[in-house]
Structure formats: structure tokens, C-alpha cells
Length: 570
Image (cartoon, rainbow, N blue to C red; front, side):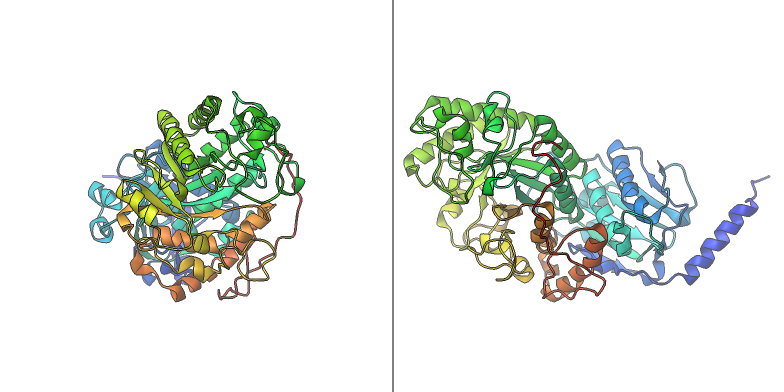
């Protein structure tokens, strides 16, 4: 019987790889250095993997899994300079240099509904292979195995594969974040990670109403969320200072209401194509967009555009300040409800995710009974679009709507009204103002931000427990956590990043990691290693003094106050 003999070039290449592996230094990153902390980490220092120039990414035939593989290649090619072709998993290659993504169950659309928090540990059930192991990982979990021969990511969904890719990204040297080729030994530490999220909803909010941020800026924020396995982006689209989303049936909302912002700048808005682009970009990264139309208050921009919605039918002047609580649509006029139905209908039609945020806070001039009637009717209009209502926790005393979610932003964990709403069926997203409001200053000398909820350094953002934070609200009623960034004082993308980092990864860890991994000293050391990554990626961040940053980190403090893009173009 004859067999094909290896070509001399193949033998030489194999010998060179073997020699390189023997001479290669250990991985620069430890397997346990990941943020958010994984559920189960089993290092194997003898099994480090070296990524070589002729490596391939092998993936099964599922289109969603292949897209994740393509994104992995897109992440690695710039810094490595390697071609990293994506190929079918059945097409065997030299096993010593193969990255394999394997989806062992039907992929899950990130825009679909999310479930409750994880309960039983995934480690034991997911330690094996096959469908049962993937099912134990849930909708977003993954298993990563690193040996000297290959890196293999296994998951039951494309979202899980994507989260595994983010972990792999962190296990490579920080230079992998460079946009241009770097001379580096691309070594991944050996061992196994088994991981899944603690809470189903993990998000951040960007206020694009006080200051407008073009679509490209929003896409950059999506990337930041995805990097740390956050899966929801809440866009605060409307407020007194500006209306930022096109509504065809009410065109003056953007033409007039979108032309202002805090401080008198030009404002801007998203066309429907802009918004679709944001939603699609986020969905590819398994981030669900949650649009907010704030009602009945925070509506001055809408009233400037359509005075007939105002209680006195008199147009108010445009508002470019930062006070709250003075505006509201007329709850006694039927035209108001036609307006609400049109707006939520058009926004819902553009939004594949399950949520539509109604706002509902700080309607100080609306009497309680009138407010209750307005909210209950608005909730019905949202439900008619097929979406689930999310609202700030001021909705709590109003009638319950099926599936309703309250976003709690208080500063005192004893809130009987919210606890009562939970007993009536509501779930809660935790956004305590004195823990995760990312517009709060880090310290008294922080150049931008507020301090009404106190100063929030990294430890304060990290050291609390979403599962026990609200008295009378059990952990199973907590859908997850969200970090809002209000932009009264934030005017540029660099300033957005400065306020997000390094606190955003702390909040991501609260949402993803099991409570058993919570340890401030360990977290600060892991977080410190991300400074060089942000530097390589060109991300501005605050040099928090409580974090032992490596000397290679730089952290430019934002001072720019101009934009490179036209107000409503992207």
C-alpha cells in the first residue's frame, strides 16, 4: 500500500515550528487574567499555544458561527499581519496551528428575549463535549480549550462563540490591539476556561440627547461593550435638549427638535438608515439596542417642534441648559396619544430587540393620578408594537404591564414602591446612581462630570452586589445591570471613553461573573493589564490611582471639544 510522503518543505516547516515552540517564552498573559472573571479556569502551563503566520481559523458550516470566525480574523489580522483564512472545520489542517470554532447547537439571535440570571454552576456539566455540554453553557456561555496543538472555542450559540473570542483576544499580548503589524510572539496560555454569564442583561446607556454623537461614535461604543461581554446598548434618544431619531409621520421632531443641544451646539439626529446601521452593527456583535423615548416629561424638544402637544398649546423656547422636570406632553389631549402611538410604532419597527424604553422619570409637573393614567396608556401602546416596556423606576406605582422591566437608578437600596412592583410581576435592571452612573466624577478634580450622586471611583463601581442591593427584591427578579452615561458635560468621543474606562469593565464583571469570583484586590490587578490594551487601541481612559497600571500604559485626558463629522451624517 502506498501513501503520500510529506514534501521536504512540509517537513522543514514542521521542524521549524517544533523548534520555535521549544524556544518560545511563556505567555505574557495568565489564563486567569480575563475580565470579566470566568466561572472556571484550569491553567496548564505546559500547553501554551503559539499562533503562527500560516495558522487558519477552522469553523463549522453554521453561517452564524462562520461570521464569528470572520470577526476573529478581523480582530487578529491587523496586529499580527497574518492572513488567517477562515475555512470549513471538515477541511483538516496541520493541527498544531489551528483555531477551531465549533457551534454544537442552534445559534441564538442576540436580538431575541433574554432569560433570568444563571443559577447552577456550568463548570461540571460543561466540562465535557457535545450537545449536553453546550446546553449547560446556556445561551451565551462558551468553553475555551488551549493546547500546544490548537485553540478550540465551543458553544451552543453564536453569542457564546463571540464571547469566547473576546476571551481569546484578552489572552493574547496587549499588542494584538494595534491597528498595524507588530513584531510579537503571539502566545496564548494553555488550559481550559468554562464560562457563562450570571445575569442575562448586561448593558450601558449612552445619552445622545444632551449632546449628540454621530453614528460612528456609537459604533465605537458598541465595540467597547462587546469587548467586555456587555450585551445591551440603551440609547437615550430624546430629551429637552434634542430629539435624535427620525419619525416620518412627525418630521419636525428632528428638523426642529434635533437642531439643538446643551450649550447651544448644532445638535443632530439619526436618519432611519443611521439607526438601522447602528442596530445591525450591534447585532453582529451580539449587542441588543434598547431605544428610549422619554415620556411624558423631558419633552421640550418635541414641544418646540409641535406646540399642539404642549399643555397650553404655546411653543416653548428651545432649551440648551441642564435643568430637568419642567416639560411634559399634554396628557389630556387625544392627539398626544396619537403622537405616542406613531413614535413608538416607527421606532419599534426599526428595532429587532424585544425592549422599548418609555423613560418616565422626573415628570414633576404632572399630578400623580394623571401620570399613572398616561403611563398605563403608553404601556398599552408599546405592547401593541410587540415590544416589552422598560422604564425608569418611577413607573413602579403605575399598573403592571406584562413583562415590564423597571430600571432602578436610586441611591438608597430601600425602595418599597419598586419592591411592591416586583411582587406584582416586574423585573429590575440595577443602575444605582451612586455606583454605576458613569457621568459621576471619579474624584473632586475630574475635569468633567457631576457629583450629585457622589464620587464614583473604580472600587465603588465594583464593590456592590446586584443580587442583594434592593431590599425586598430577590435575585431572581434582577434581570441585570446597566451603566448609564449622561452627557450634559460630555461632548466628544474621547470624553465618553474617559468616563467609561476603567469603570465599565468593573460593572461588566458584576453582570457576568459568579459572585464567588468577586475580589477587589484580584480585580484591580487583572484590570491593570488592560491599560496597555487600551493604549494600543487608542482608547482614552482615566488613570485611576487605585489601579497598579503598568509603566507602558498611557491615558490621555480628553480636552478636545470639536467634532469631525457633520451633525446628522455618519
